[in-house]
Image (cartoon, rainbow, N blue to C red; front, side, top):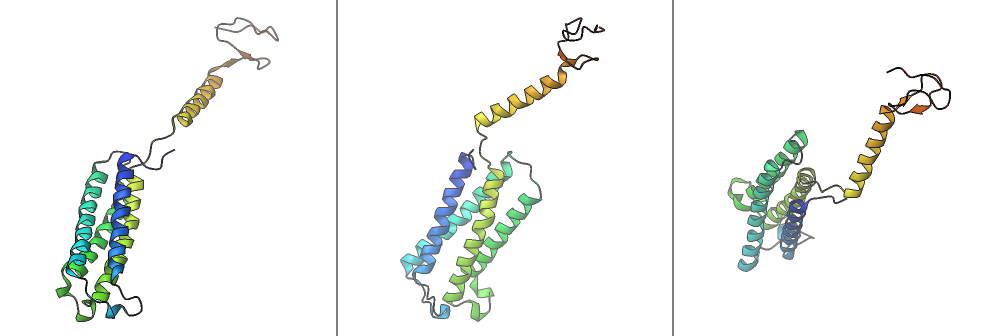
Length: 187
């Protein structure tokens, strides 16, 4: 049995590619020993990183729309929680990356901004996967379905069979007498 359908697999691969790309680019100039000493990126690297981040936002919009129109499962509390969780993390990410002027000075250093960006992207990966697995389930294996249907038909046939009222021997509806005890069946 497949875990995801084709749309889900496509969204999963895009999400994984963007998350790994953002983490790789964010860690490129990141100073692990002292995050506050992290230098700002070169123009080309920053442009590439921001391009990946914008692509992740576009992916989030596409995932949200696809999950909303998906009819695989009903939209219940799990769906709502996953969508809200995903977009809250994207909002925090956007705040630290694109609007750092509204934050206190200690959070505007390159180390803090890129730390928060990496953390929110990794955390956003979790609800994105949840949405993908929840709203784009894979197809059920055909042989499994056939076996389930056969089992159900056999159960229904055994329930529908008639039995002799005297000896409980299985009998057919068109029989007039029981072949084992000879009891007469009423119509």
